[in-house]
Length: 407
Image (tube, rainbow, N blue to C red; front, side, top):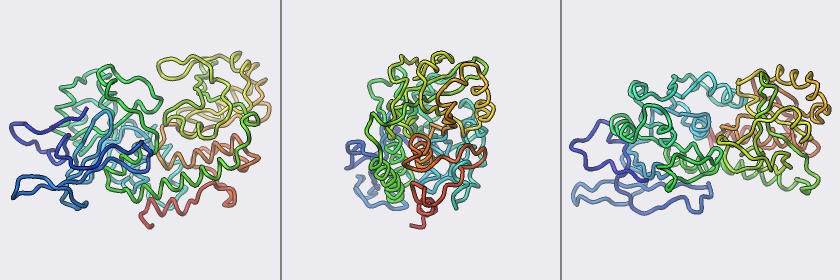
């Protein structure tokens, strides 16, 4: 769904960031490997009236392509960004552009997860002071006056007050959209977008934002950390029949129930669990519209996983000690094998970007396979717990250096 911003009667003040534009050479991220991005650089030839492919310069426009927007042309690296979700903010900060984030949907639920990880690194977190974009009302977007909106336009059309004409109005008068939300759980997008929609992995999406911020080399270094972590982990994983059974849940304490997800399904929501290849006790459940299912304590006991991980455990969405105590004191919950063996864990925020993914892969590896990767030290409310250097699965200083642009 490429959009062409040419052909208007007069240029708007946001023509330096538009959809469409001249595109020469390049193509979609080959094979969607997540190690590069669709970025083409062009410059205008005032003499011939044509466009020529050039090396990246401060004055050259460049085009990045991602579904469902299609091609989006940038005349400059964005300096004022509405980053709708935690994963977008994480990608920006990981690439050294956290300071360009000025607003997000809900800072009170978005920033705690980022602080949880970033404060353990020798990097600045001053950028986490963000304005609230709320439910993305059109007037709010005008007030925020962002260069670009890291929000999925397909998702916006499901909200009250957003039509295709509203999207075009904001694109032309404020700034374009550049987001892809339905890759989170591979949910079906709105009907108008289904033919053109594409799902991306977490790292494929990160490569798209690397292209937006002209940070291809920094992305490659960042991705190298993840590849190294996974090489080391995969080399140690036991045969499938020797791996633990796991249940991925969100505790619904007031309902005496759990909202469960399939552990190994596609989507960046599961990018910290799927690579660890544990045996999912809920692999065969029929899920609803949002990719999960509500089950009671009796169903949990029937499944009885070796390990239970609680989604959003570090996200300030609920009180983890209270949730654990409620499950342990329940007449059925107390019988769960994971509870009896103290393997009921607070897990990460699945709305993750690259830095969160590194930490959460390490966290999950320790929670699933403590005998291989070291014991998980337990819940820490405010900051990722201290891990002995010899038991870390990636180099913290290397990560900080990449974020800071020191390598």
